[in-house]
Length: 109
Length: 116
Image (tube, rainbow over all chains, first blue to last red; front, top):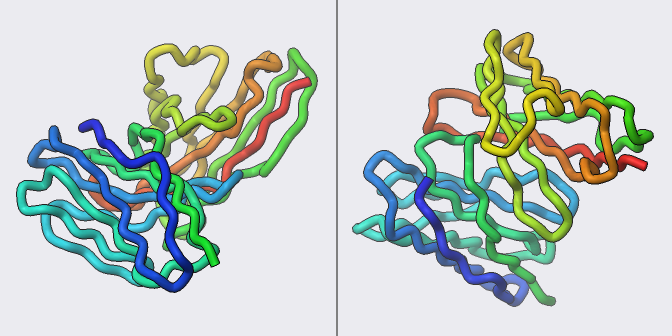
């Protein structure tokens, strides 16, 4: 799996968009970008994944740069329940993942 | 999303005993499941890949005789921690992939193991 770099922590005001960046400059052509989040003492929750095109689902949007060396996860209207550790993972094999330290997102009222 | 369930959610056992953790995919078949371990304030570490009907593949440094994995059906994988010791106390998490390699994977809620 390609290495990813994420900021260790971010704050966001409730109701505002949360934009979480991830650098993956060594990504190879067949590797997907996956985002998961983990709320304290729970298993990770799948959020979204993509190869090269931008993706959107009911939880979030994923913006992947044209060169695929970085991506941004967007939570459009953050709530207090979105406070969690967010992991960006690059892999050809969903499920078999190398987790980094992630970004601790704190949503504040 | 798809549901992956682990049982038990937490367990306390005495040193030297064995503990079995179950991971079930409730609404899909999973030919491959994965087992992770997470120590406090650390990230998840992949322990092994569990393949239905065949032997598990263990990551480097993980003792296969200590962490026995069985994947007897398309919806169930089990992890048995044998002769548990206090240093095995951790949060054990499984994941299952619903389809081909590049589809999403879903995680169980985790099992908190405490060895006393």
